[in-house]
Length: 327
Image (cartoon, rainbow, N blue to C red; front, side, top):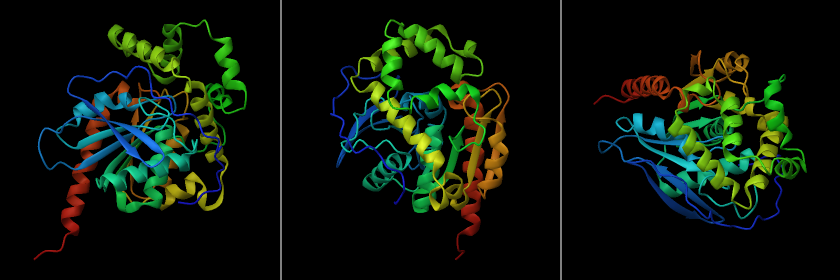
């Protein structure tokens, strides 16, 4: 996969997390080692054998835990896995220090090739949606269907509330912010994140909030946390500026897989205006708009996302049967 993106080649020391992230009941997390990268892969055993594989990719600042609720709902429909991208969750930073969208897409492709699980039902949120789009465009043989939840695709007029996140990409801003907020508690940080990402933060239970705050505290202990956030944000911004065949919108036009687009009306990071453009650009797409959801619909309204995903799978299976040669 070629790209004009220029990742920072400085190698980040690989420092394994001091404390592992939470594993929900019924889930499993395993470690997969590939040349130059180690990945934590979260999964929930499918309820029956022979279900089609699915792979979920989280967004900036997220982890595979973002998919726990959806994976539980889909355990009867797919053999679902969720990656911790390099530097996030329980995955240490990559040896090459590449946090570009193309770099992350290469990691996903390498994992799918090494695991021989493809083609998969590929699912991505936010930055993970941009990564999934690139994977589907350059390796259509690996993707059965594509589901994008608030994908981070370039906007001419980005949301004002998204500007602070984009500022992390500016050199020096992340360490400055880390120093300025050194005294902030994990609870305060968690409240701010939920206010930005959820359409209604009141949906989060007290138990869910406590777990999220504990996870934030764990991440802050990682010596590479702010560096990974800054360089990944830079990777998103760089991807927004690419033109020609490397443009994310141009690559979206190349996607052959049936595509489900999910947008939240209360999303403060990805404008709902982008839903119409995305539905025109992805050639075989359907659109789900959730009135009460924000940026992470799979966490806010997993039931609605699961229903739409099952409809996509059912229609894909019907199309496959219709296309199969009859003996």
